[in-house]
Amino acid sequence: MAPELAVAALQRALDGDEGQVVVADVRWDRFVPSFTALRPSRLFTDIPEAQPAPAEETPKGEDRGAASALRERLAAASGPERDRILLDLVRGTAAAVLGHATPSGIRPARGFLELGFDSLTAVELRNRLTAATGIGLPATLVFDHPTPNALAGHLRAELAPEQPALPIVAEIERLDKLLGGLPGDQVDDAVVGRLEDLLARWRGRPAATAPAPAAPEELESASRDELFDIIQREFGKS
Image (tube, rainbow, N blue to C red; front, side, top):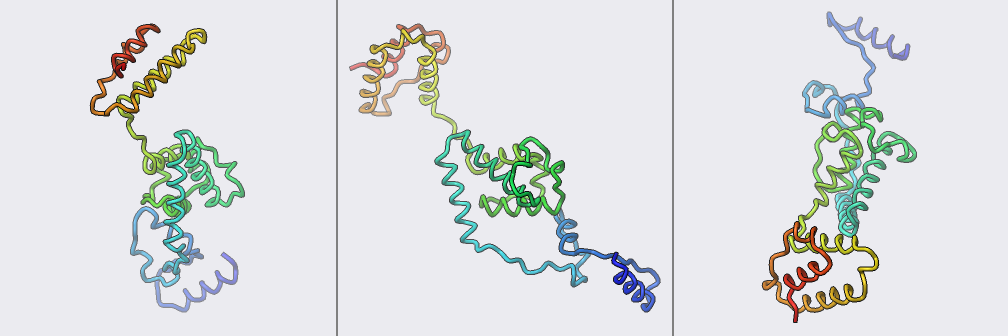
C-alpha cells in the first residue's frame, strides 16, 4: 500500500472501537467481477465502493446488427472458410481483451489460461463474444472450451451446424469422386456427353419418381461400363 493510505487506514483503525480490523487496498472494479464471475455473492453488498458502476452498454441494435452480419458471412462461406472466420473472431477478441495490438500472439492450440486469462478476463471475453454472435454463452466459456480452436469449434456448432446431406446428394458426391479418379484417357467426350444428357433429363423429372441410389459398395467396385449402367438404372433414359 502507498504509505499515506496505509497510515490513514491505521489511524482510522485506532480511532475506531473494533477489536479486529482488516486493512486492504482493493481495486473493487477488478476484484468483484473476478470474485463473482462464476457465482453471485452477497459478501460485498454493504460496501458502496464494491457496487458495479453503470455500464456504458452498446445499443442493442448495434449488437444485433453485428451478429446478423456475422451470420450472413457464415451462411455465404464454405466449411473451411467458416472455421477461419470464427477462429479469427475468437483470436481477435482474445487479443483485445488481453491488450495485444494484434492477434498474432493468440495461438489457436494454446490454452486460454496459458495465454494469461483469469476469471475476470474470461468473463470479458464471454461478454464480447456474446455481443458479436448474438448467442448466450456461459461465464465458464474458456474453461469448457480451453483453446481458441476448441472455442471456435463450439461457436461453429452453435452458429453454423453442419446439415446432413440428402442420400442422393451424398451418392452424387461419391460419383464425382469416382469419376475424378478415372485415368485421363477414360474421361472422354462420351463420358461428358452421357453426364450432360443425364442432367438435362433429370431437370425435367418429378422428384417423387427418383429411384433409390445405388449402394456405396456398388459404386466403389464399378467399372466404367458398369458405372454407366448404374447411371441409366437410377436416373432412367429417354
